[in-house]
Image (cartoon, rainbow over all chains, first blue to last red; front, side, top):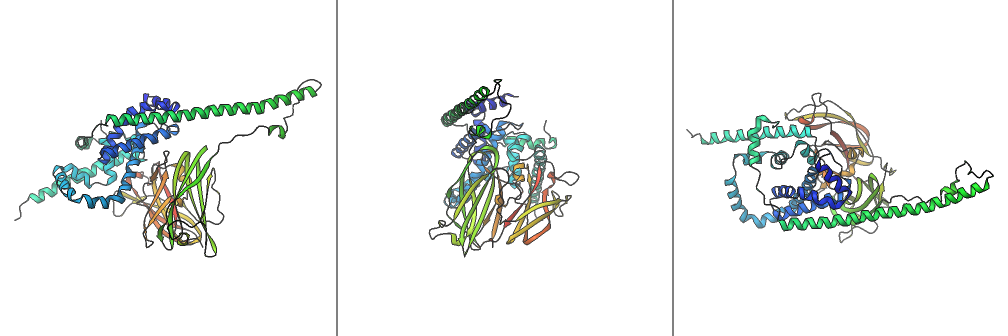
Length: 185
Length: 348
């Protein structure tokens, strides 16, 4: 039994011990929510909802051989998805109000984007999420599997494919640029 | 060492792309910590109280059971010349003196939302149900609703597997548009009944509609996309009290046995329709241990086939990503097929 398992077991026996799990993961979940949502206030809401749900469901939590953090990521991801779903309904209205600023912002952002950003944006949402969980959140295959309800083997294969597609997209962009630079006869 | 050594440069670039984040503001972090600690202390106190109540109850039970038993033993011993108790068990009446305390599971409809037009003369409404499941790990919420309509009674039902705990779930129910009053709320004559069923879900008696996967073939390469495979499946179905329906078949990666055990479960499919009654999308959910509704993967790629009243079988093709299929053309472990029946017409 590793130290995290012991912390979880202690917290299951006495919920007041949950504080040690919060101390261990609050920053990581906050950073994850911030990266996914790009908004500090929303990220705080997600952290709050995540830990409240975790506390409520802690007595039923069963160790699945990965980490307690993977379970927290899973709850946080659900919260983020729910936010996106809610936002889908309000987006047109917000766009209308924010559009003058958006144009300027988008131009600025576009200038800051590099080849990799552009290539990443061409990948499917599931590929992008896999890459973010692996390289931004530094989760293992098993942990990503727990977050996404997939087996570690599926995650490993899917990540390989996502990297392959990213490489292909980068190559495509480079060839397009070369074609654009060739002077017309 | 990375398992993707040919992409090490890309992996490094992706790590460098990790967006910068601000640290969790200390005040907010500490405030949430205190709040959680407070909640934890209260929950622990409730747990302690439950334990002490259980202990008190056990003590009470001991008094109720042991004292009569001792009394009976003494009396029986006195009645025998040898002074020993008889070897026969106490009669039923004696045993019934011990009251059996059973855990109480509860479920109740707590909110009925405003009705929305769903086309085809039907409306949809969201019904919120609160439940408390304590006696077992898993059960099924069984919601039935009726409405007197055109000389008969409209009957609808929804099922939802749930896990132990206290939670609220939302059902989408559909019924004839005549069930709605001018102000958008449902007519008083609409009656809901909710039951928390442990074990087999009761047969409604009238409904006999199902679709099940009868056979699965070997996956073959998809003709247009090398990253996909076509998996042939045979589906048995029976549709008795609906004119027509749609069979939806798809795959589930990281299958949850509890979800699959409940097949066929059309009730887990949320059908989103526009005002003209056109089906825009369907979404199938299962409920995780935290009570979150998780959209089942593969729904986007699910195959939809129309069927008409009768009992028969049909062949369908499920399109699956190649990484979920092994060398023999079978689905990998943990990847399962699911089938659901989307009932298209109101019951006759």
